[in-house]
Image (cartoon, rainbow, N blue to C red; front, side, top):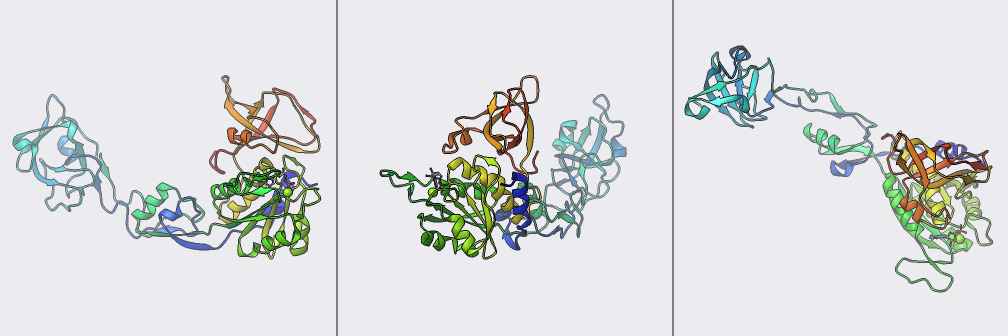
Length: 413
Ligand code: AMP
Ligand code: MG
């Protein structure tokens, strides 16, 4: 039996980032950028107004106040999208809208709320009274403030979020080069399994693992391919496992423990290479890992929570590494355990738990329901895995424990 960390290291040592593909901006959401994104222009391309108001010469209005306003001649009206042609001379101003280019001669914008319309309603040909001074450059967004032409606005390795998509669009990219998402084959094993739409007959249960796993794959940044159910025979298991090389990764559930019909490990050894098959953890010690035709293979245990915890500890980091992410560990927080827990001392425990903020600061961790690995409700109600170390057979209430936040992404906290 190896430790969780040894198993994780073995897995990740076999995983490399996938190749790249070019996708549309929207398809790039959540993906890892594979090349810097270079701007073809200055953004913004010109000095422009940050306010609706009047473009002025700062020197003209430096002494303006409510008591003694400065009156300026309005020489132009500049909407957004129009290049102004009339310069602002001494004693003059141009009415200007947000985003419109600042005219020659002007070096600040007074917001409209700090002016009073004079003759002609403050429009071209009339006057405006400025009630407050401005500083040089006030309310002007300068050319190239976001990025300069020829410079990178996004860097390879960064994760694409909505703001990155906006930046890419602003510098003329309608597609992006990103890491490919791993294609993950999902196989459930078991003679007892029936599909969701079937009411289980005597001795049968519904196949829920294929569905929870597909969701976990999707959430990890992979593309799930549910291949179906293998019955507990070597022939049936072989038939599905031999499809592994069509995918970047294969995950099976069930058939890896000590039962008389647990054939996955045997078939894996015969068709590919077995790296490890038992990890010192609970739930789900029979975690199996190897390769089939070069494709990484995970034989997760069949109990629904063991499957999910095994995925979380071993498959999710592998999928993320393939997808190009460098942050592979979920955020962790230290919390105070709120109940006594007995455990087997040779295993790492991952209790399905809920973290809450303690009134005095810090976090409290409590189990989120029945801890049977056959049940999923505690996993559903929980937001973390409470990690209890090997070497302990009893962890008392009040002990500080490490909790793995499974409700937030790697690299975010
Ligand atoms: P196994 O590892 O094959 O012995 O399965 C362990 C337990 O998990 C058994 O009670 C199975 O019935 C259950 N199980 C196995 N596969 C699934 C599945 N796809 N969906 C729900 N439960 C399953
Ligand atoms: Mg089984």
